[in-house]
Image 1 (tube, rainbow, N blue to C red):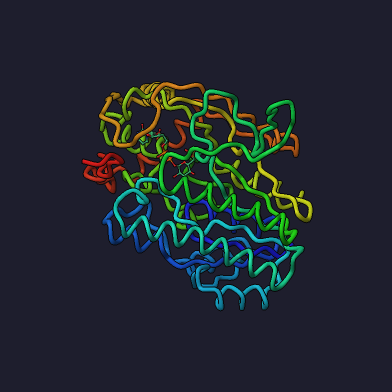
Image 2: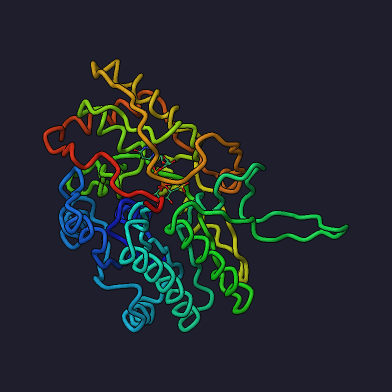
Length: 384
Ligand code: USQ
């Protein structure tokens, strides 16, 4: 399949590009270096050094024989994007080119406007490029479980059947995102649903939970192919952060009561889910939503698991409750349905002790690169 992957250098983007090219797909990646620039500006480089995207593609090709074509540019630049669509004629496009960090989106006006503009304009551009070149091109967009918030009822996959005053209707599941970043994912979903109805485009929205993991089968060939792995307070996600904290002897930073429950998945499962979505495309006019995660944990559950896995490796892992910099429910009901991808054949990895210990050992190899000052949260949601 000819696949255009937007956001091809990020934590998931590069891993997905290698994985799909390994499956025999023809992959072109597009990247604007946002994440790397933001890390430079905020002085929060990833744990492992990562060569630039052209170098990564060359290393991958030299080691594996599989090619990933690289185009440097911005999905918000419509003439650039349209030109790539015209030249490459993708049968599917994977849209990862959104600003992915909740704390970044809540830093201030500049970051808020960037997140809004980047995430919504890139999505609008992709939709228009699909219409202009090939309406049949399947658009797979990375969404987030965070669009639903934490409602006191079960979370369905995208839609909710409602009975109201004796009549029934199926509508998009109500959204209550907890950061501006998450809000943009709710808004882009609405936009995609709109164009599915109006122009008949075919879309899969993958509402993903927080991802953990350090490497994939493909990146294991060469450490320089590893995903960009952030552990700082802005771009690091909770379990990846806890692994680094455990190795550095920093007490695990549980925000608030730690009852915040989310659906987690291994980075390998992200790749499998995206592939399943691509191989089983949505129908023309269909806005299809999958909830993409393997299992749910509270922050306290994760901290205890890391503590337990670390103990056997001789790490004394302490857990610390710190004031929550975010505004979110710290004790809540959480029961999301996630049967769609399982029914397509997903066989998830589960977070067990061997997986945690393998990740801890890998982090420990770069122990001297850990910067303790990147751990404590700097971005607060509330108005002070
Ligand atoms: N948390 C802590 N301690 C930490 C870091 C986070 O207790 O040191 C808590 C947060 O308050 C939150 C939970 O852990 O309740 C998850 O936080 P996170 O930073 O791992 O994830 P989040 O900001 O929600 O965003 C991440 C990705 C985002 C993706 C989302 C899926 O950055 O791109 O969409 O996970 S979800 O969380 O389901 O919305």
